[in-house]
Image (tube, rainbow, N blue to C red; front, side, top):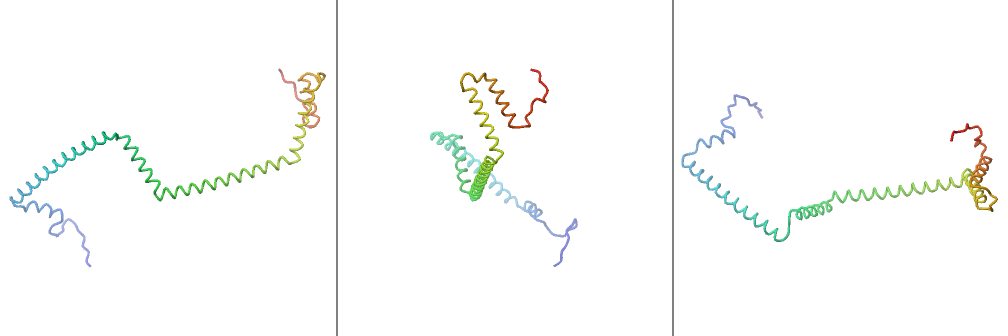
Length: 185
């Protein structure tokens, strides 16, 4: 098969555009008149159809008004219909299933995390350090209750606090506050 490049000096008789233009030139006066009449008739039909359409649109609008259908209701109905169409789509169903599955997996992960944290707090509470701290707090609280709630010989509230601080400092050797400089009041 021989391929030929086209250029400025093509020898093809007529191209499609040339044929279209040539058909106008070749028309006889009678054919031109007939086509002109057909064009006029089509213009009149188009005008008539536009008038009929405008009349039908007006009638349509009046009927909607009588039924109480306004543009806002139409928008709402279109939105509702669109939402229902979207929910019935395969893509929406797949996305919904994926999100549901992810939510369930996240729920399981948080549940596992919560039980792990709960177990760790339980382990911490049972540790010797925490038990020792808990005993010191209980001892201090019972001392304060005894001093405040006992007979009137217990002293003032300040006395109770200072005795509790002394008891606490005796239990922990690193709480020596005597080395600290006095702060202005």
